[in-house]
Length: 70
Image 1: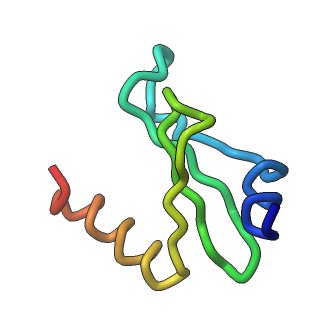
Image 2: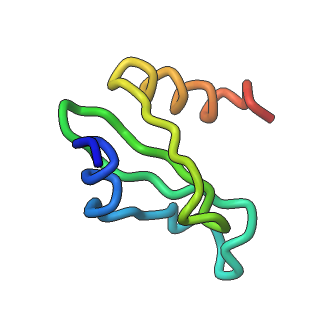
């Protein structure tokens, strides 16, 4: 098992408090080493995770805030 896979298994995942109680259509985020972020589907916690660099994470957040991904 590589280091990233091990890190993803042991990291604390969180979802937004704005996600609602039913947990549908949510993503979970985890802080990873080197400032990276992991993102995964809350409905498929054993599925794949998207890994973003700090720059990619900032760009993603700005796109969400601006409504660019709607």
